[in-house]
Image (cartoon, rainbow, N blue to C red; front, side, top):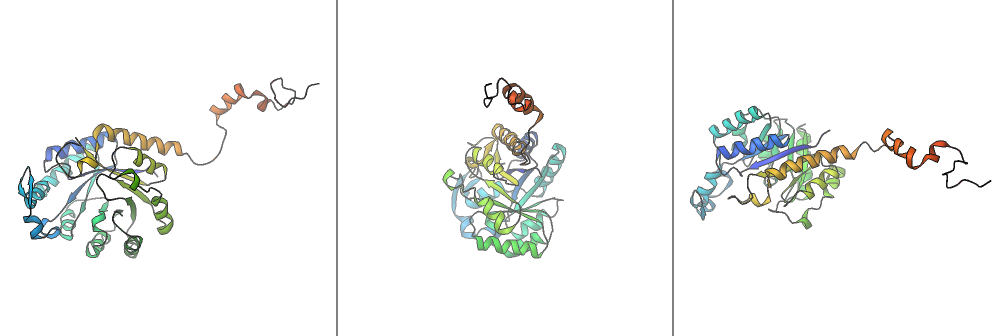
Length: 292
């Protein structure tokens, strides 16, 4: 099965539908399998005190204005849906509250995504699991006990899922990647395990593919210098194209694990090791030839 590559647009569109369209086109051109957005109900996810707190942004001077500026409504998501169909790429979104998940049910997603921040929100998890759609579950900021609880919940509801190893720092330091957790999660929970990365660069994501990650998710941006908290942990368009190519090359290079002598190698062997094909001890180039 091919590694499922997700371009995480998240909130890197900065509330601008034209930027969102450019991200969609970039993800499709790069060969990503899907592009993902995010949806929040601000008054549910954040307290009034948090939203009233000061914050300078292109949209105003409070946290509410900043966060509202990053949120897409129905009309924008309908345009995203239309544009993704036109570009030929799947899209879906991660909800950060029950109301946002209800909102997203208006669209015919093939997949769901549980963000790391929602891993302990049981009403939300039950709502997602009851949809029975294949679900990617990020595991940043979580304990093994918390992950086990989610696994049991999804299995009880008979909802297909895939865990995603994740370190929820932005950007993530290379020392915190701990990619061997991919195999730890596979062994402990006997399920597919992908990787959701927030590092700078491509190397760690490619290494995750080589370690057997069944999905790779990286934030996509038009410019890492743009306004936004996720931009620094994102991959620009040219880099994302390279990432997809590198992941696909890793997939091909892993092979099937069967040791065999290919026709191409056989031709080289005939030139470099002729006595091994001749099967005669008296071949003049045989290093084990016994002089007469």
